[in-house]
Image 1 (cartoon, rainbow, N blue to C red):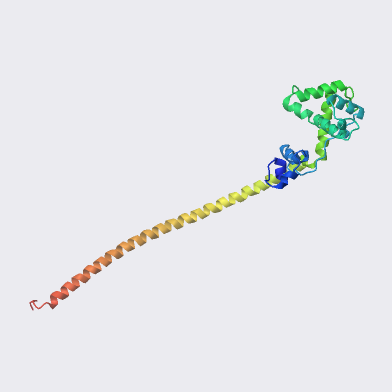
Image 2: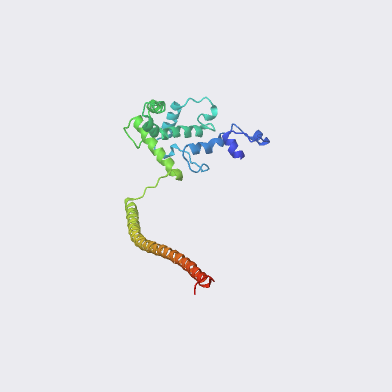
Amino acid sequence: MTDVTGRSGHSTGTSVDSYADERNMFRGLPGGMALAGWDDTRAQIRAPHFGCLTATDEVIDRFIDNLFTVSVKAFKRGGKLWSVLRICACTLVMYHNTVTSEMSTANVISSKLMEVARKASITDVSFPASSPEIVLSQCSEIIMNSFKQSNQELQTASPSLQSLTTTVIQQTSALTSMGAALQELTVHIKKKDAVYSAQNDQLSALTNEVHVLKTELATVKTQLVMARQTAQSMNQQLLSPDRNV
């Protein structure tokens, strides 16, 4: 509970709130990871780094010097937070191609990065005779690939064509078998329906016969009552003293 309220900024209504450090940026990391699309918000992230490039440290430092205006001593070169500044710069370069693709080069972030790349005259031995803008784009792709390889959750499956073909064949075979089984089941159901229909016709015929028999039985009962009444009447006449012999 304290972890949730600590990240959301809500109050627990208890004395625990007095121990919460509102300046602790790490409380917001799980929320940031969730917004960034990570499934595991507790996963250990390996930050992007310039070590995957063949560009020299001199070129990278020159790029960072032109990118940021640093007034805090800890963030300056040799300071204890200099590595944090390098990670921030590396992250900007890593997402350069993505941002440019989604927002074109006219956006302020891409424009600034390309301006800094030109001003710092960045180069890389892997891309000789390339303009600073091209070097920046190539570095962006390399850093992004390295970042994905270092963080397993970001890696996407890349099956070979042969395994993909095998999978498709297996699925097709399974669908064919299912289709044959479904057809056989349909035939069986139709046979059952025919039997049920015949039984229903027989039941209707029997119901009609029962109805006829009940009608005939009612008629016989009526005739029997009338016969009894006639017999009683004849007996009374035979036993009457007024009867002429």
